Image 1 (cartoon, helix red, strand yellow):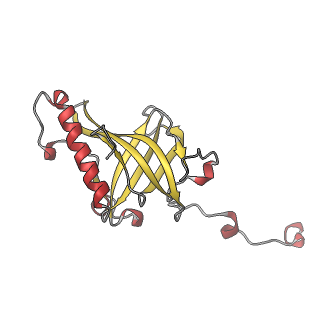
Image 2: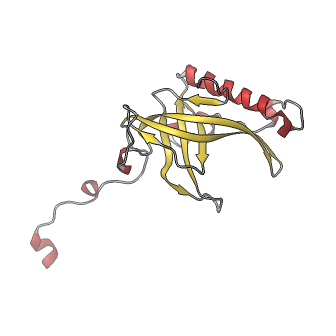
Length: 183
């Protein structure tokens, strides 16, 4: 948990990025454009999981006014920490993980292990490992109540297997000799 802010969490170093849109904001289903990422937290990372749960509890306490002045039963509201084994059974990357979807209208700062800005967009992608700053807050809008998560900043820790069905050109093609395409 971040010092002084009970709703802020800095994830551990084994957190993985999925559906990473940290370089350019995107619109999902016609919503306003936002920067976003699905943060995969291994179920073995109890320190990060406990910090997220504590931050969610703090967000509920701070947002009691949004819940009509009463602390809601957690089972009755939407919560940001979700179980990948239950909700994303078809996606191997989510197995053995909890996940949090975070977004922001403000671009995150993206830095390396030495906290120097990363400028090459190919360096940070879905599948790499990063520490992520997350800030949890209560919401009550359009008959939906719960706790959501703002995306803060990202610190790339190490490369990982890209989480994409996209292949590279060397996997798709073979070398053609000149006579192969002149005939």
